[in-house]
Image (cartoon, rainbow, N blue to C red; front, side, top):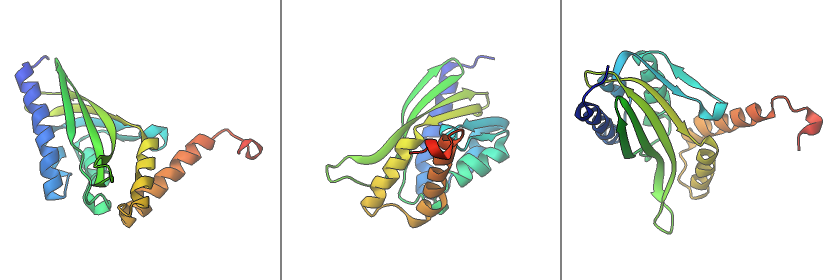
Amino acid sequence: MTYPREEVMAAAERLKQAFVEAEQRNTWSWIADELYHEDATYYCPYGGCMPVFARNRDEIRATHYGRDMDVGSGWTGWSFPITHISVDGDQIVTRWVNRGPGQRPDGSYYETEGVSFITYGGNGKFSSQYDLFDIGHQMKLCDELKEAGLLDPTLEAEWVKPMKRRIIDSQEQGISPAEKV
């Protein structure tokens, strides 16, 4: 079913505003209930090293908006602003950034970009979302934040180091010890 462009755009704008509100609340999981259908799906491949596929709102709340975004896991000081929205029928494309705490000496933000492909499913809610961002650049950004004294130790221990290990392990599959440099 095709929905009016204004309705689809309004849902995308509510998502953008929900991100701002989530940063202020320091919690994200409520967004799943507000903006996703009960049977909605969410997928993020994390560079192939830790694919997340949530098959319903509860799983979206537990993974994407819970474990992966809630600030209790060390994301304090981070924001995830949506910078661009494009709507084509029921399809929404958002461009956003993972923005770390603080700013570089030159005034620029510590950030990496990502994109979401979202399907609007009516009643102000989404039926699916597919997120892509460069996990390698995200790890380099975390290294830069650590060097600047801005990387939360909890985030480093519970997300950065395990993710780096997953990336290395996934890249080394099929390579013999003699081939490893």
